[in-house]
Structure formats: C-alpha cells, structure tokens
Image (cartoon, rainbow, N blue to C red; front, side, top):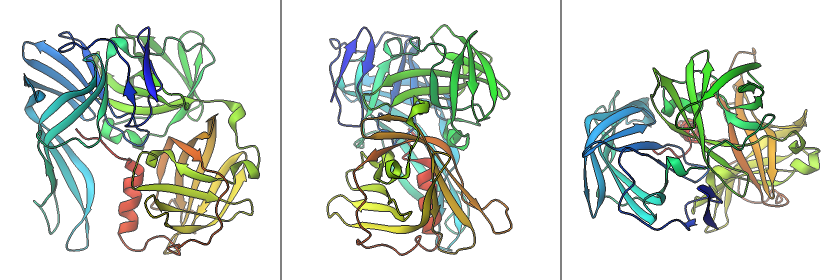
Length: 431
C-alpha cells in the first residue's frame, strides 16, 4: 500500500512496510518547525515531537515522559541529540529476578539519533536509535543491566515522520462526529496513558466534546498549531490527528498542557465510532479473530477463536509452523451487543473477563473498545485489569475446530503476569 500526498494530507499508511510518495527531498525541515516521529503499526505506541533549532544547534524533544533540551550534531549518520539532562523513566517495567520476586526497572537515555530512511525531510520514514539502558532498581539483582543500546545500533522497526504543518489534522470533523479512543481521565505522563480508559467522544455545537462513559461534555479550543485543547477536571489536554488509514485506523497525538506548554506526548490509536457496527448476532461474532496489535509481528500472531456454541480459545499462532498454543475459554457470550469472554485462570481464585464493544467495521477489520476485568468470589476486584482501549480485530474466517495443541489453561507461575503486563502496555517505543 502506498501513501499519497493530497494537499498536505497523508492517507493510507498501515504497518512498517508502507512506502511513501512525497514531495521532493530537502536537507532538513526548516528551523523552529515541529516534526512528529511515531510508529505507524497499530501495536506500537510512543512518540517524539521534535522542534529543531530552537536555538542554533539546539533541539527540544517532547517525548512520552517530558520535555528534554539538548545540543545536536548533524552528519551522514543523521541528527544526534545529546540531552542536557538524561531522560529517565522510573518504574519502567517489571523484572522477575533471581530470588523469584517481581521487581521494578528504570529506563535511562542520554542520546537519541534520528536518520531519514525514506521519503523526504518533510514526510517519510526515519530510523531512531538511542544510548539507553534498562536497569533493575530493587531486589536481589539491583543494578543489573537488563538490556542496553547505542545510537550506532540498527533500528529494526522504523518510524514515520511528518512535519506538523503537513499532518492530516482534524478540521474536517463536523458536529456529530464520534471518535473512539479519546481519554478524559487524569494521566501522569504519556508512558502511563494506558491507565486511563478510552472513551467515545462526540463533537457538539459550540466546540464541545461529549464523552459517553464519563457522561460529561468538555469544551475545547483550537490553538495556534491546530490542536484541540480540552478543559478537563485534571487540567488541559491537547489532541491532534496525524493520519488515517484505509482500514479505519486514525493515529492521533495527545498531550497534557500546563501554562500553554505541552508536557509530554503520546500516540493514540483511534477510529470513528458508528452505532450501526455492533455485533448483531452470535454468528457475526463467532469468528477467528487476529489481534491487530500483533498483525505486524512476523513471528507470532495472537488469535481469539470464538464458536457459535459458546466455546473458544485464545493464544499464539506460530506463523512459521502454523502451530497454535493457547488456552480454552470457559465460555463466551453476547451481552447487549458486546462480546464477553470468560477467560480461564490457572489458579481459579478469581474470575477474569474480556469485553469487546464493536465501534467500527471496515472490510475485515472490526474495531472494538476492549477491556479486561477480574473479580474474587466475594465480589471484590481481582488482580487483573486492562483499561478500555481501541483494538482492531481482523476477521480471519471461521474458527478452526479445537484440535490443535492447547496449554490446557493459562500459563502457570509468574510468567502469566509478565505476559499480562506486556499485553497491557503493548510494544512500547521508549526512545
């Protein structure tokens, strides 16, 4: 699929393999202009908004965890920024240490490099690398470097880049438009945005956004850069759209604003919300669904197989061998037009449920608002939760018979929780 330039609008970009048809290349974007760098794949999050030459040889990097100034050097390797102060993400992830305990890690980066690989300086693809490391902060293995990287390493993913003045924007959206994926809850920084549930927001007259789950309407203004700036109980939050794709996906940027300055930035996957796209019957929902978050993974895909008799399973498909290893559902059902999966838990100490609310359908792609909940027998909340998020599910046809190898239950031991955390966070891009 190729993305084409139409009066400054980028359309049709999905996944890491898209090529670009853009304007003639130039050395670099003009000084003082904002450039967005972000992963196009549905399953990757993270973003950098870079203002080059805020002063000669200086750049401002707005990332998921804050604002970082630095000096840069430009050469045939790209533009390499050395931060004035290291970028640190505390409580970055969970590590299962040698004493069989879950401990926290931190992420630190001192340099970041941007190198254009396709397209032009204004719009195309870039390789991004960093001098960074993840270190265990507590427990038996305190100080252990889990992994490290340098700016000279190869970037195996690639990122889209677009001059913000050429992004698609959202000026075409009219009163009555419904957008699934906006968040009105408080967020500490972009790295924790997944902890705020996604909602459906409807544009109202007088520049308002009505959030369905929150049952509130918030006013917004359009700032000088074309962002929507919402007035929320927790403060101001800004949204702007970068691109749409032919399968119903929309890539937005979100940022909290304090005293007129954006404090962090994060990619937000959204889609149009259409009331007519509900799961209309059991037969409509009883399909072999591939998770859109893994569709770009060349090794494995995550599948949820739902059958009309209420049986099903979920697990990983090895793309090379065709082997499926998963666990059966206790049952699934259609409740008020939503798919509710009763997920088998190895300990049996609590019940876990995954809910899909269908909000859009484009071809074989069913866009759902997905969330997980768990509950103990006494009714108190269980240990597992996934906050509501936009997650495309690809219809891969009728579900196969339950004949392939199954784990027989959720994977036992701590790795179950490690996998659960990874699924919640998605494939992060901490650069």
